Structure formats: C-alpha cells, structure tokens
Amino acid sequence: MGWPGSRTVTVPCTVEIEHTPESLHAHVTLDAGFEIEPGDEVQVHDAPTQVAYGERLTVARTATVIRAGALERAWTKLIAHLELTELFEVSFSERRTL
Figure 1: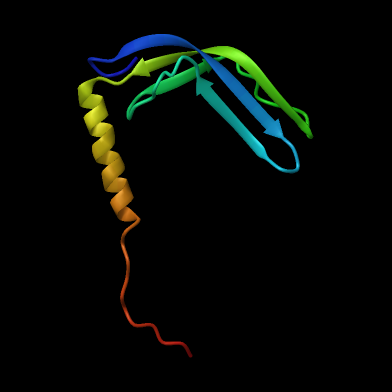
Figure 2: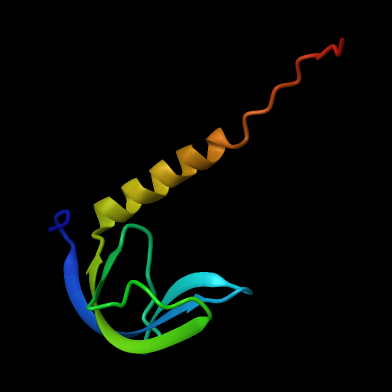
C-alpha cells in the first residue's frame, strides 16, 4: 500500500493509444493539472490495452495515484541519482586495432 506518509488520490485522466505506421504509443495524461512527483505510483482503471493497426483511440478514465511520503520521495531521488551516475562510467583505456 505504500510507505508511511503516503496518501491515495483518485483523479480523472485521458488515455491515448495509437497503432499506426507513423507511431506506436500509449500515453496517460492526468487531468486538472495534477503533477506526478518522484516515488508516486499511478494505476489507471479500465484502460484499453489494444487498438487495431492503423487506428488511434482516446478515452476518459480514472486513475488512482499513491502519493509518496517524504521518506519514499527522498529514497527514490537518491536511487535515481545513483543509477544515473552508472551511465557516466567511461573508459579511457587505449585500444589497439589489429
């Protein structure tokens, strides 16, 4: 259910799914300017999972957002920073081509 300090909010959302030659994507936009922050969890209710090839579907649904508490938010930021620094590992060793 979440860490201590978390709370649950239900918000309306828009689900867009496209499966065309130009694009294959699924996006969820929370309505009313609701902002997601590090550590938050979102579950969309009754979202469609497929759309026929060549079609685009936009539907209104509801989503449950479990807001992270201060401790979980800090933990998420720390872990994300540590994982990002793994991308910065660079080797300057000399390579020889045969």
